[in-house]
Image 1 (tube, rainbow, N blue to C red):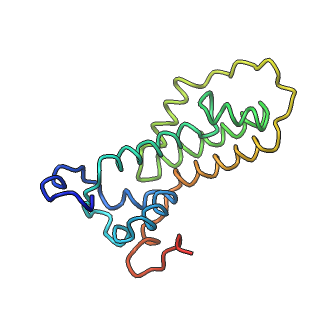
Image 2 (cartoon, rainbow, N blue to C red; image 1 turned 180 degrees about the horizontal axis):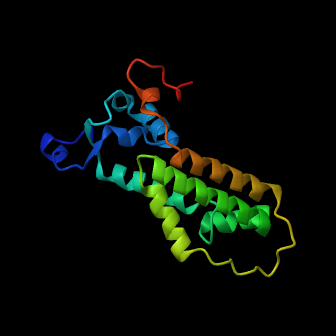
Length: 172
């Protein structure tokens, strides 16, 4: 938005400042790319390029899809890496945590996604042809990295961490 004219900026979508500190990953990216935005109040209006909205939406949707629950991508990956019994237990715990987060927190997204999974994705996964052969270490490591990125996208970070005058936790 730096090279956009004032007329063009008035057409850009406006997001609340709290959007940029809503998760650890988004907050970290914003503190590196737009440090001036991190000091704004949660209710401050920030004009952003439309592709920023698309990117934030993509991060959220992909992170929700990779949660290790049910028959979504994360559930299938956890079944592959951890085995069917462990993936079922982890999926149940995640659904319970989603319900608690949705009921006790500010954002209803977790509750909505948990209800969607329960309604449409709760049936058992179709068995694979080969559930005996173990995955190589590279694929297990990739699963771990993707799971950490998912948690960084979904776990909220208190806005006080990014308040003006506090040291930036993402700057080295």
